[in-house]
Length: 574
Image (cartoon, rainbow, N blue to C red; front, side, top):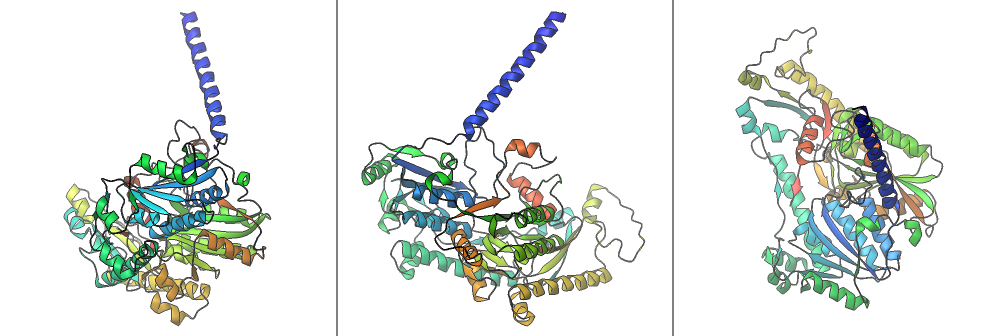
C-alpha cells in the first residue's frame, strides 16, 4: 500500500513538473516575434469593441485566439505596416463593431495614414451596418459578396425608460439635479423623453447624420444631397449597393485575394493577422523610436478608491489608480510629454475632483494634452479642466456640465417581500440616504443646496480651464451633452483630431523638433492573466453585458446615494 501511495505521489510530482515545463515553453514560444514573409497581406478583422486600455492578456498561443488590440495598438499597427516593406497591402474586414463615432474616426484616420505609403487598402464587407461601412469608406476599394446585405439606412437614438416597471415592484428612484439638461435618472423616474432630452438628442442626430452624409459623400464622390437620397433608399441588397455606387464590386473572398495578388504582383497570398503583427517590435521597422511620450488612458466610470472591490478596477477609473499613474509619469525624467486619453461618461463627483487635481499637478511638470475618445462627459469632462489643449473628434460626446444626486427608495419592494425595517436616528438628516425612507421636503432642500454648490464649482472649473468668464460658460453648461463639433463652436474643446494630432501638439509644447521620432508609451501597460491573478484579490470579473450593467448600477450609487458628475443617459446611436 505504501508503494502504491508513493507511486501516486511521484506521478503527481512528474505531472506537475511536466505542466510547468510545458507552460514556460509555451510562454517562451508566445513571446517570440512571428516571422513575417515578404509580400504579406495584413488581413485586418475589426470586430466588437476596441478598448482604450489593454484588457488582460493570456500569453499562450493556443488560448489567445482573438485580438485584444487597443486603439493605440491599431494606431501603431497601421504605422508599422506602412513602414514595413514586407507588408504589401491591407485587407480590411470590419464586422459587428461596437464602438462610438470617435473611435470610428480614429480608425479612418489610421487607414488614411497607411494609404499615404502608396500601399492599397481593400475593404471586404460582410453584412455591414453604418459603422462598418463608415470605416470601409477610408479604403481604396470596397467589395461585398454577391449575396449580402448593406444595412445603411440612417441613424436612430433609443433611450429606455423603466418607471412603469419600477412602480410594479415598488421601487422609487429619487433624483435631485443642477442644470435643466442634467436629466440623469430619467431612465428610472420617467416613462418617456423629457422635452430637454428630445431637444438634445434631435440636435445630436442632426449634426451626426450631417457628418455621416458628408464623410460618405466625399469618399464616394457624391454631393450631400445625393448621399441623403441614396441613404433614404436603404437598406440595400448587394446588387442595389453596387448600382447606387456604395461599393465598387461584388466578389467572393477568394476573388478579392486574386485581385490583391494581381495588383501587388504577388505569386501567393501570404496572410498575416493583427494578433501576429502586434508582436512585431515597432523599432524593427523604424517606427515608435526616439523621445517618449506617455499615453495615460482613463477609460470607464469614475469611482473613488483603488478598485479592490468585488467589481474590480477593470472598466473603472479609480482616483487612487490614476494618482499612481500620474505620479509615476511625473517622476520619470525620460517622459517628455503626456497625452491623457479620456473615454468616460463621468461618475463620482469627489473622485472626479481628485483626478482633476492630480492632472493639474502633472500639467505643471510635463507638457500635457487632452485627447477625447468616444465619450468624455460630466466627470470625464471635469477632469480635463487643467487649462491644457483639448482635442476631440466631431462625433465625441462631451460636456454634460452638471451634478445630480440619486438614491433608491425600496420601501415598497420590501413590503412586497415581507421585509420590515425599524430605523432609529440621531440627527436631523441621519436617514437622508436610507433606502427605506423617501426624501423629506427639508432633506430635499438640503440636497439641492449642496448640489448647487457642486454645480457652481464645476462651472468654475470649466471657466478656469477654458480661460473664460463664469457668465459665458454657465449658459452652455446646464448638464447638456454636446457632440465634439458642437463643443468646438461653444469653446468647450480646442480642435478636432486623434492621436496623431495630440502627438503633434505635445511635440510643440515640449519643443521637440518636427522631424524627430517619438515613442508613445501606454499607461497602464498591458498585463497578463498571471500578473492579474497574482496582484490583488478580486481583480476582475468577466466583461459580460450582465456584469457591465451591474457595475454601472453600483457605480451610480443609487442604492446609497451620492453626488455624481455623470452623463445623463446611456445612449447608443445606431
